[in-house]
Image (cartoon, rainbow, N blue to C red; front, side):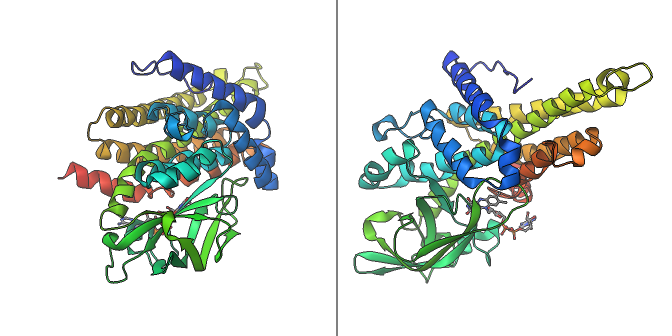
Length: 391
Ligand SMILES: Cc1cc2nc3c(=O)[nH]c(=O)nc-3n(C[C@H](O)[C@H](O)[C@H](O)COP(=O)(O)OP(=O)(O)OC[C@H]3O[C@@H](n4cnc5c(N)ncnc54)[C@H](O)[C@@H]3O)c2cc1C
């Protein structure tokens, strides 16, 4: 069935054409090999396919045109995330970080020279981005207490510390790195943001084996007296961290859009499987034989639809300058829980085949788990929603 056209009034013919072009690409390049890439942990192939997306002009989808991007709106970004999530979560996650969180910090916050120097290569995928904030000893929801330090030494900052759970860690060419520039200030006011090239002296990375998203890169980034030229400071000062976190609210639409894509794939796989699975007495397919199956499929459909509408509405609010934090936070945790629930039903409805590595539903279940941890756990997002609700 694919992701249904929701016929939302703010979506144009261009948006439809964009969706179609990504879907055509995904059918040709991504869908068939996703399970095999996952099995083989084939990160190189994921990178190759990610770079190939440049032919659709989407790797700088929201980067302003004057820096080589497509200058498109947030709706276009969500279309990209939904379609890639449906086709292959590994390519989707690589793209999410590249086009979303990391790119936005650069084009919204960096000095002009940095934008001109780096963004054109980001927009074509020649340089892959990563976003390095999380640290092992600092819980994610307390990330403003980070310990990675940046000390000014002449014309360079010297970075020391370790970042963990970083998407694209071993494939990125450029890292957007958060580090403490003011050791006197413990919280968010003493944090600077840097753009660090993978070849700067003192930076190294390591892959971390993961539960889901097998063909994607995820791991640690180490800074050992890493020397970063002063010009590569994106922003420092008491508001830099808070500004980046405001941008992060947009990432909180991309993550659930991938989840919704994965969930729709799980539903489609289940319908296709159960339409062919027959009870032997009358030869009826399970989709016709059992009301339990029909009810389950209807519930899966309804939850995915609700989840998508929540995300799209939050996006509409954001694009039109309305407050959207409560809406995006609740949409994210709802989508994060929806994909887990839908994929669990899909696996159960596949019977023994659901448990088999030859079928994709087990991969969808593992991949779908990412959403409720990355980009703020679903518990943190419930907390945020409640705080907004009770203001
Ligand atoms: C697939 C994936 C990709 C990621 N990519 C990146 C990336 O590119 N860059 C990056 O910087 N980080 C990335 N992360 C890290 C991610 O942002 C953190 O793992 C996340 O913020 C949670 O932080 P933590 O692991 O320290 O868990 P903790 O914060 O220690 O949380 C542990 C548990 O306690 C719960 N908890 C914590 N605080 C509260 C509270 N106040 N109320 C209720 N429950 C609470 C959490 O919800 C969670 O269930 C990624 C993680 C994953 C899984």
